[in-house]
Length: 364
Image 1 (cartoon, rainbow, N blue to C red):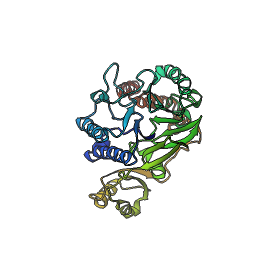
Image 2 (cartoon, helix red, strand yellow):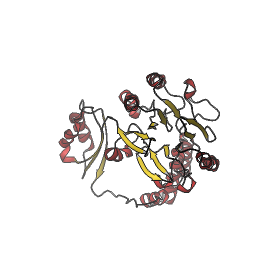
Image 3 (cartoon, one colour):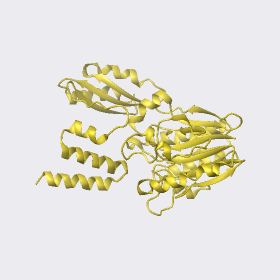
Image 4 (cartoon, rainbow, N blue to C red):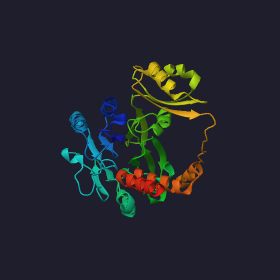
């Protein structure tokens, strides 16, 4: 059996509120489907966050519908829900509009395909993490009956996301007998030996956040092809996505930015302008002159010479300690950490309420 493993396609995401960026996510997804067909995959596994929202735009649904038509009769499709496309409370996920198996909503679920076990559990967080661990503990007993087995999940593991409150599982919480762990949630590609098989995050198919750029430059974006016949092999397939580039340039050398505009697809630039006593209005006007029509979009920030920086330690990261060091104020540090935790869980309204209460107290 040959498996195509993709994840975190985030169909419907409209980065920087640009039509072009929404379309980029559809194009990356369609290219991934093309690659899976070219590689003659028997099974397509999607490890969650197929859609960016549990209520995606019509174009996202239409894109997925057309993809299913293209692979009909060629490969079977299995997916789990991610944290983005899981409906709130007891709503119905958008996947229900299509004849696509969504595995493990609330519990571990499995099927047998050509003698191979494919099991999955959809994203669980917060108070449900203990339940998640209990469900995962069932896998090894089931997998013992099969020569090869696949576990699909959309969760963060501590070793790869060592932030307080950011991961749900430690390595000790994972079963050991899977041939292939088809994981999603982390947007960077990861492939490593684990237990009796391979643990893989196929990563997002597009650059969703600025902090993914360095990993994309190193490892690309795309999918994994997994061969379960004979010796198990896993190899990456790259996608041709729009470049995003982080650039630091001295204020007197802005012309150098033109060097970063020469790509088949117009890039997105994230520019840090460094200098002393910067005339910001002049810089903004000059950026427009140099880049308009040559890039899809650019974001800029300024770093004055002598501006204080915080050194981020290696290993597990204590965000509260970083906030303490940078802000130098216990109240502000506590506020920043509380806002981070709320926003990381998508609780925007609660974060706004916390910020408003803080401002009310400070302004008394």
